[in-house]
Length: 259
Image: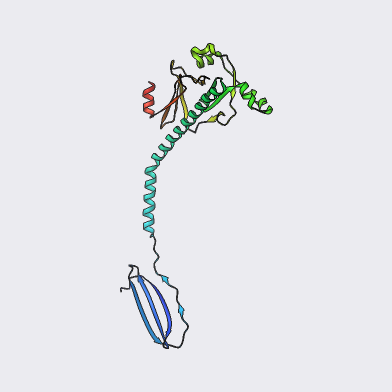
């Protein structure tokens, strides 16, 4: 065996017929095993077991580590733009699902209360909330909460009601509304970078800030666009049923659609 071959050796000494027999079991780095037995006269010596030593441990060299780290950095650099794009698209989808949940909650609330329920959008603050008739909200609040309610009351103008009700204006009376205190109705903010681009009446194309749901299941027909620079989701509210359909569009598709 050449001297360059690194080996792992264990030595064992034992007394045999007044002779010290030394046995060495060696294994090369290539997996080959060798046994050496040496004997010499010696006085009695207790049996001793010598610890095995490893001349070379398995592992990566410095060059191998540098190569691996370089490859990982290159892969991260290549994948980073795709990861950012996927994350931004996921934010829009999450925001759209939250708005759909709020709209469906408002529709169910209108059916259960037998009263109109509104969904309010603040596009500058990127918030959405559910508005209930003030008397309904007051019945659910404690005395201390009713005191603070006055600051959140919303008085709708005639113009607002005209936009909300259209031909059904004669069936409604202007009421004061307040934010629903329940977890689903409370004001919520859209994720950073996501905004409501537009809310348009399906018939007139006029911009809206309020969507109404009525006790008979109908609603204000509207198209809501939620978007960022990577993705747009269009929510269309059917006026006759109050149902909501979603459609995903790229920024280019959205631009050509709005022309």
